[in-house]
Image 1 (cartoon, rainbow, N blue to C red):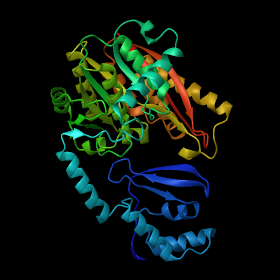
Image 2: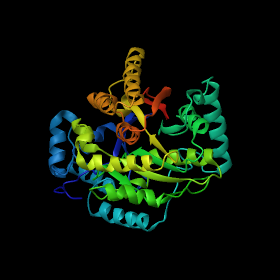
Image 3: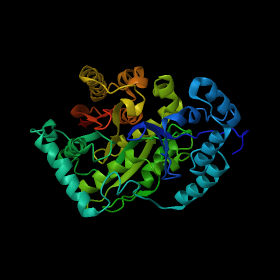
Image 4: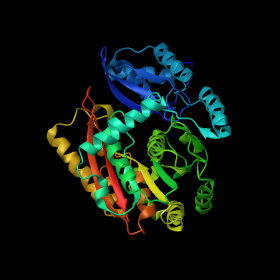
Length: 416
């Protein structure tokens, strides 16, 4: 990197976390799986990094930051920081593109998607994972929900479950998958799983044809179902298949399904939902013919295999507090307001008000940052003609012990 280089930060996840030395630091993480590394940016360097947009040269950035009252910033500081981020694969450019081509090629050639988050977000060892799901998730949820989700009657047609890591979302997962265990149709053998894509997507949805590995064994994809949905698409539904490599919103659901179904044979239809343009604009996705054609294809699969298909959405709700860019943690009054907003959204979903759910969440998306909007909307569209009855089974706000940031999540069952 030289003074005239124009560094451009690529699309990565950025969060603010507590730090004993600096108070708070900016952390950059790759949600696409090109690198496992994280970049930790201390406060004095943040004004430099936020200007890595590809518009300004390193020389321009040094002058601009120096003129903002940050003190004199030598151009060498900017070029050195840019070079480090380039080596770490956080900048868009030849270094990153070459690495991405290698990783994408390896993933495309693989028949199985590895369990990317095993050993981090959940146990990688089979017996430890089984004990954790049984004891810390399913059993605790039963203990705090006396009647059990089976009290709703009917068979489970669809399920909204959390996608927060299973350490923090244990009870939420327990409520969701207790409901599935209690009311799963006897003939169900296919699970359409919608997940949030935490990495940018070029298309509204992304299919994946690979088996998903888990510490409990692999789960095959349903090729016939994938072909049927792909035939309805007016865009390439595999254009963003690489986003499946590191995406946890689907992986966690497959782990819980594999545990609950034990030796029972079943297959999955993994779908990442992006809908980035619609979320940015607030426009109802149903107004887009390409999106509607794709989701109609999923609905046709559900309608064409009665009693055999269950739709699952791996979807969290709000993300608020310092970790996500808010100036301070929410106080009790704000948490109450947040819960009211979340529950209103969830009740709209439970009543299968597809348009109302989208409109309500989209209206304050910049404030609540509901990352499960796209997969929940997709699930609702897929089952809206089935006559399903929805019920909110659990709602929770998981509060970060360090800075008070909140991720809210829920379990919602749809029965018919």
